[in-house]
Image 1 (cartoon, one colour):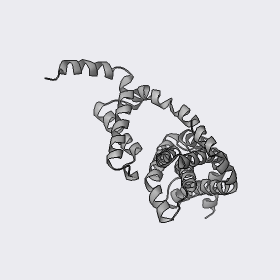
Image 2 (cartoon, one colour):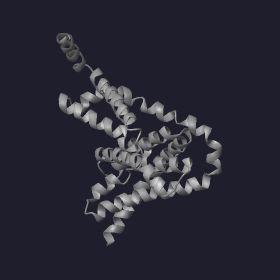
Image 3 (cartoon, helix red, strand yellow):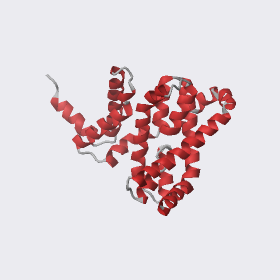
Image 4 (cartoon, rainbow, N blue to C red):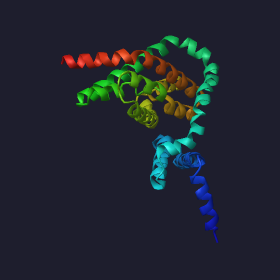
Length: 247
């Protein structure tokens, strides 16, 4: 017979400590990866989206606040910094190819960054959204910390920007393969760089699952697009807003 008394004591101990948030995070990650593997690693079964859903359900079922959950999950969150720095290793291995493709990469970066900002703001305005929402959605294709800082500088809503960033990353990771195939883009470098520029960290993680080469170019695109978004968005978003106001 199961020792329900022992399980009850364990739950009381676990729920009273930050370890519960960490346990939920790790368990949902393992479960999401299991579903992803069972689905043949289909991009439609994106593990990030599945993990977010499972964590949300766990918090709702347990009545735990996000602040309490993050007190334990922050141990995993801390590893995001070292993981980002570790992207330098595959980047260094692809450095000769990146130097040879400097001009095409620069053109793709400028085009992707400007298009992501302008199109997001324009769509919000054309659909009747407020100026604040437009300022919030403008930096959505940059990685989360940069996007939130840019949104705050633009007087947007950084918390909503974070949600939009995650949604953008998941959408890109899910749809990129089908879009690349439809456009007959076969180059791992082109696929990876485009995915990194458009879908930041989540897209980069998806690229590394395909190949180290694709992941390296995705990491490059993610990093450069974050820097360029921080430079361009603060003046490009107000410019689009003023242009829209004229009409």
